[in-house]
Length: 296
Image (cartoon, rainbow, N blue to C red):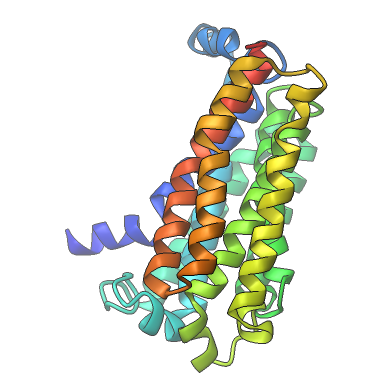
C-alpha cells in the first residue's frame, strides 16, 4: 500500500489535475463554454471523432505526459530533494530509482499513444512536450530562467493542446498567455524556496545565480504584468463584469499577497506555502476565463 501511494504521490496529482483542467478548458472555448460543457456527455455518444471524445483524450494524454515528467524530475533531483523535500517517495525510499524510471517511461508512452488518434498536430505537440520535459529535467532547469520559461511554456501550451482537440485553437491563446505568465512567476518563487538544496548541489537557477531577492523581484514584475494583462479583455469589453469580478476577488488579491509576502518573508517555509497558494489559485483563473468567454 505504501508503494502504491508512492506511485501516486510522485506524479504530483494536484499538478496533474490542474493540467487536465487546463486542457479541458481550452477545448470548451469554441462556443460558450458552460453551454458546451452541458453537451459534453451527449457529444461523447457521437463517437471518437466528436469534440468531447477528442478533448477527453487530450486531457488524459497531457496529464500522463506531465506525470511522466514529474516522476523523471524526481529521479534527476534526488540529491537536492533529500534536502528540500525529504518526504517525497524517492528520498524517503518508498520507491527506487528503477521503479520511477520504468513508471515515467510507461506514463509517457501511454500519453503519446493517446495523442495519436487526435491527429498529426496533436501527436507532434505531445512528442515535443515529452522532449522538452526530458531536457528540462536533465539540463534546462539548471540554466537560470531557461527552466522557468520551459515550465511556463508548457503550462500555456496545455490550453492550446486542448484548444486544438476541441476545435478552438485561436480562442485558447488568451488563457495560454495568462497561464504562461502565471507559471513563470510561480516558478521563480519556487526557485527561491529550493535555494538551499540547489546551492549545495551546485544547480544554477535564477535564485542561486543572481540571489533570492533578484529572483523574487523578477517574480513580482511578472505577476504585475499578469495583473495588467488579465484586465485587458474587460477593458476592451471582450469579457464582461462577471469575469472582472472573479479576477478582482480571486486573482489580484492573491498576486498582491504573494509578491508582498515573498519579499517581506523570503523563508523557505513561507515561499513553499506561497507556491501552494498559487497552485490552488489556478482553477480560479480558469473559471474567470470560462466566465469571460461565456459573456458574463
